[in-house]
Length: 310
Image 1 (cartoon, rainbow, N blue to C red):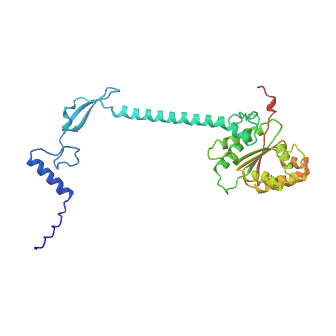
Image 2: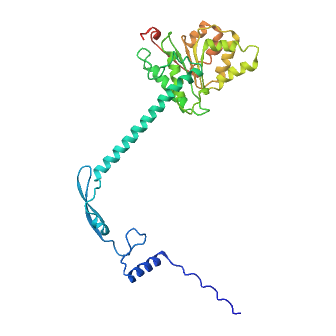
Image 3: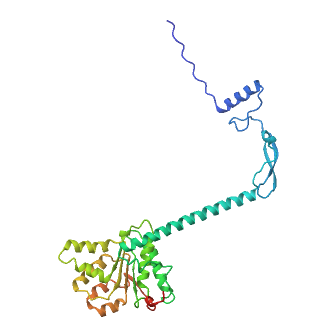
């Protein structure tokens, strides 16, 4: 049996050689040069021609240079450069308006939901239904109050887990708007979908004192009440100083303030920190945690808003 011949080694063909063969074959068949856009083009330059274009918006006529194969298209309606740019700008404007509308609707829906969230964290959602920073009348309180509130909110929003944030101590006469500001800051923070409602705790001081007293005899329950305040991303203690807590309650409050040192905390009171201790000497341990190192103290001036006309 004769030996089989080894297969010839495959000839390597380059793209340029393939194109050359294609051109030669078309010439043999008298097909002319390769069609523009076919993917394989003739080495000869493409013949060009000029057609007229009329802008459908402004009627401006332009001469467009196109491959000769389009010579029979006649007048075409293509937007001129200026009208095309104007159309693109208008489309971008409409997209921006639509995005703004959707964002506004999302904020409105979230704003309606937020009242339930505020109620769940301890806020009287009926009394503070309209408590926002934008709705706060700062004419009596002074611009420094709003600046302090906004700066505190910005710091809370931007702070990392272990970044220090000095607390905000708001004091002033009854009805001056301290609670409004505290709730407004909580609302603004909770509007962020990344902030769960459980991370904000709002306490009226008198109610918290009663809650602590009801844990007596149950160390586990007491630990739960304290730990929720200690772990909160933002803790608000409203109307501190109107009560006369026992030494044990003050000890528990001191524990919370100690654990929350340099973490976002708001305290409102009719009294300054010094007046707080003068009124009730038991508060001296708490007051030492309210000093300028840990809290920015701001006085809120103003008459009692509760007597304002509806």
